[in-house]
Image 1: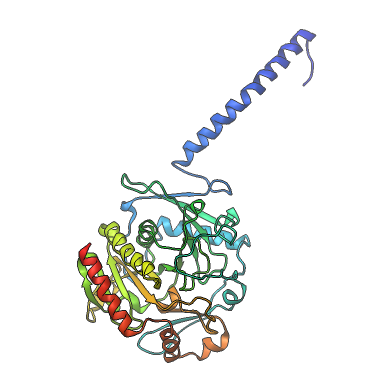
Image 2 (image 1 turned 45 degrees about the vertical axis):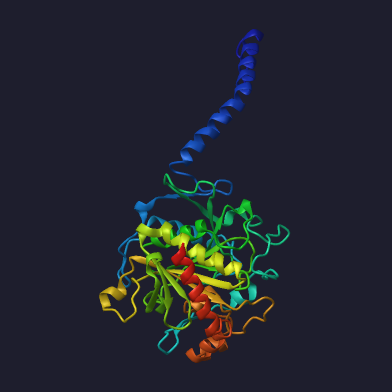
Length: 398
C-alpha cells in the first residue's frame, strides 16, 4: 500500500483493514452457508463434498427392452463418468481394459471372462468365521478408503424416504467389469454384512434408474465369499444377456413376488416393477433375515428381467425388461474353504457370469465343468426343499 497523504489518512486506512479482518470469519461463514445451499440443487464433486445424486420414483425407467439402443439415464452418466474418471486418475489396483469374453456352449449360455488381475491383485479377504460376525474396526472397512474413490452419495427425494441413512457409491478398486462400484449405507455407522430393507430397496431402485439392461447389483453374505464385513452391495455393467433374465419360475407366494427358479442353479426369485419396490424389498429382507437366523449363507443378484412365467415366452415378452428380477441362492457356507482355481462361486457366478482367474481354465472350461464346481456349494436337494416350505409358510403368514 502506497502512502499518499498525511499520517491520519494512513491510520484510517489501517483501521478499515482491521475492520475487514474482523469481518472475515463472518464472511467465510456466509460463503460456506451459500455453498451448502447451492449443493442442494447443483452439488459440486470433490474430495470433501461428494457429488449428491438426487432421485425420485419419477426417474425410474419403466420400458427398456433388451437389444434396443437407449439414451443413458442420469444415473448411468453419473456412474460411468465417475468410474472412468477414477480409472484415468490411477485410483484402481489395475487397469481393467477390454476383457476376453466367450459364451460356453450349452443351454445355460454361461458368459465367461478372463480377469487374471482381479484374482491376483485384489485385497486379501478378511477371515470370516460365522454369518453373524460383529463389525471389527481394526479390519479393513470402507471408512479407510481414499475419499477420492467416492463417486456420489445417493439421496431419494421423497416424503416417506429413509433420511436416517445415506447411500455412498464408491468404485471397487479391484473391478470385475466396467463400472464396478460398491453401494455402502452410511459407512460411519459400521453395519456388518447383513442385508437390510434399506440397502435392498436402493439396490432395486438403482437397477430401475438405469436405461441399460446390463446394469446388475448383487450381494455376498458372510460365508458366501463376502471379503469385507462392512455392509455393501456390488453394482456393475455386463453387456451380455444372462439366462436368469428370462428363466422359467414356479410361483410360491406370488402376492409377495416370491418364486422358485426352475433352471440350474436352484434358488428363489422375487420380481418387482416400479410400483411395488418397497413391498418386495421388505419381503426379500424377511427371507434373508430367516436365512441369517438359520446360519445359512446366501448370495443375491438383481437384474432387469421379464415378468415371471413357468414356460417359454414369446419373443416380445422375453425381451421385455420393465421389471427387476432378484435371485436369492441359499448355499453351503465357505468358511476357511480353499478357493477354486478357476473361479469362486459367488453372486455373479451363480447368475451365469464367470470371471475366470487363469487363461487355461478360461479357454478349456465347459458347461459341465462349471456345473460340477457350482454344485459343490449348493444345498442338498432335501435341505433346499425343506427350506422352501419354511420360507413359503413364513411369507404367507406375514
